[in-house]
Length: 452
Image (cartoon, rainbow, N blue to C red; front, side, top):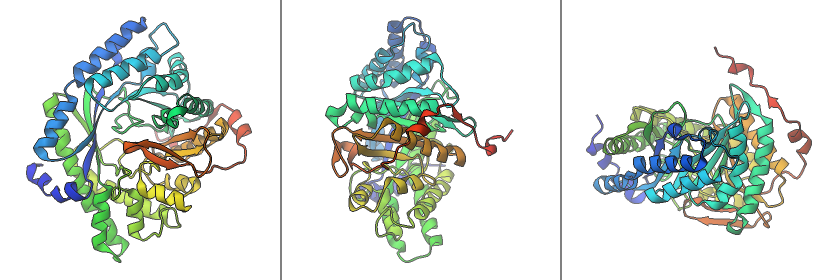
């Protein structure tokens, strides 16, 4: 039985080690909002979101005050809009993005995810319309996040979609260049996307989910870092065990918050995502954990091994502390959102190639990486293809969230503030991938996808 005394043991973690609930995300099904008239569809979407989520922020604030646990973000995810909007007699889905944005503002949440399409095996009309609407939708909205799943272990990689997403990212960067391409910070391309992810920008409410659920994402890089300071020079067995015990305590906190929020909101408890999600604040960095394990700088040789152990230990410790673990559940390595990663890029210790290797063993993928503004769409598509291959072959979720920084070159910086942080512009390989990307078609699924 989980009770308040379990949480009280974490006071020091909260006060001095940056432990928090990173997000409470309410997932809402919009499948009953379809309508041929896009204006009616938008109204149904707005009304349904507000009816379910109008108390989300106030309930989260009550829990914060009563338990003394910071809940940093309150968010909403919805059914992939390409599915809902396909019923509409229009090819412009921007009005739906604006309806989502207005609903998010009305409910007081910071982000709403689900302006999404699932095209890992091919397109429908709704998928095509949504994808071409993404750049303008992200330009005209403040809180809407978009995602596209272009690959899966069962189906392979849709290279037509990969090629298109490189172009969409470039267009989004251009349309939002006055704010350092922030539209691209709200756009992620997936392989093996999950249906219950509470983290942005990739959250959407999957078609296999209940009508309405509450998912919670916990975070505690600073807590893990602090715990490892007590086991300096110990063996990896001791390090792994220390991380497991710490992850257990962090996840128990998330479990009690998720259960309480579910009860007060009157909706189903979904999952606890036990990811280590960093912030730009000092003392809240995944990179610093890896350095505490023994690396001079994150990115040097040994980084991938250290990250693999960290990710594994977090999962082993956390899974025993919650009745339902899901989402992404691992260690995130977003460059702009991790002060240790930022420092490693600035010193030259961390490159995109090394980050790609690290994504083989961590949660998600190449995340919040700024690249030169003149990076071609084909190069971005090839980066997506590489990352998808890692996810497809290893049967894991991988993703790409890159930001072509218009007018900027290697060494310049983009600045977003808040949790999105800032990022040095990183170099990419200068050789062309144009012919590779232009082939189109679908890279077949690997042999081990045939498990039936």
